[in-house]
Image (spheres, rainbow, N blue to C red):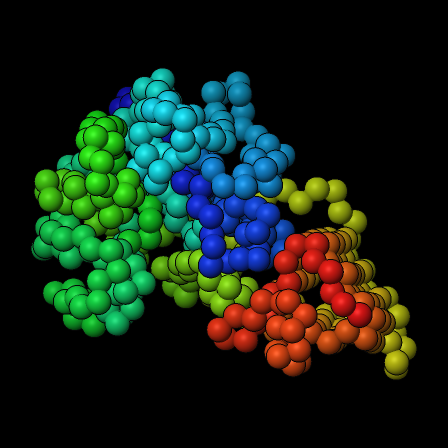
Length: 412
């Protein structure tokens, strides 16, 4: 019987997420809540676990307490079988310093790779929304004979400045890798599109260890996985592209095949939520054959109370989590996270209420993201007058989404 390759999962979860501020003011970007019940990191971890990768190191750094707590409470694997999801802070193995880039994060944990002794290593980002079977990518990597394989998604070439872009030859090898280039040529068989890196890689272990060791010795390097490691291996002819469109997971439909969202900005984060609440969303949270795992704690059922003309508890075109009470108010096209409360005659439209948010009687909220444990006073108006919102210290995104940070005080 042929031995199944030993694959180690490494999730890069150390990013600051400055563009998501104030949501990342008190937490790491991968710990930012998403879709009511989840955290961003749950998507990468669920994909790895569903794909049979059951030994996973999560490399953390900035403001990691919330992320560490979520991993400890949610991601407990079977110790009997030697499986684990383990948060790894900066080890300072090469000096009293934090990780100096994603490649340095790998380098500082070479001892973990040596102890595990895998055949291949999946290095995945922690903050994208998608479904993917990593086993299919590992199989494609093995077949290619490359030292590294980069998951690529086709995007219009006018968006090239937003991504690391790969130029490929007919054999599927990457001939050039550039970070956020202004001018690119389209694909030979699709001139209007280019391959953008998804930030997911599969490495043959020796290729990764050799590359990060060589990169560590280069004092001019930014120690970045894409800009330095993949560029280095590309120049050596050792990288291949894996077309994300060829990846198929159980329960997936033709409509949601290839769905991938980078939620690195407030507007992208908001838009990804609005995807979820459409009557027929592209990304299906209800695919039971490839579930997105999480744990929200003990929650009673959601409750909608009062059925009077003046106060009627309703929610339409919305996601409603456990513990929510809509007490005579109305939510439309919104995400209501666990234990959110909406008071009588309050109106919440096109908004995201995170855990424990309380909306007072008669309040009006439009196109807003309100982080955990914020109390909106009775009669307060948010998202109606952006100049007034800014004057109160709220963040307003370029596309007009009002964002209130975790625990912030909202003036009456």
